[in-house]
Length: 102
Figure 1: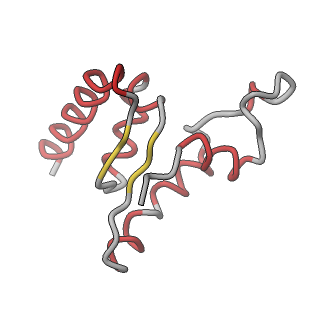
Figure 2: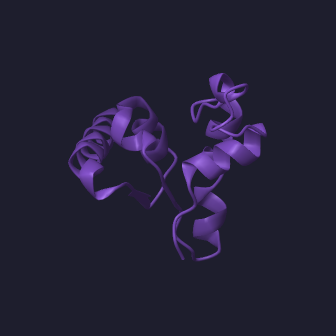
């Protein structure tokens, strides 16, 4: 199964279309409601024997958001091929921080 999109999760959680000029200013993957949704995703998926992951551009552009995803225990973060290096770097840094803090 493909990873659900952070964009889709954000759109559904906030009820906002990121392409709407009137509402684009409230579309934010780091909104507390979206972050809570992501944070509660991994444990039930793992309990059901399923991996938990997301896809989207934000993890490649925002190291702090990537750290949220890593801390939430997601198994995978899919990004566009041209964003892979940045995304992988952000994941590695977030994982190292978790290990250091543990």
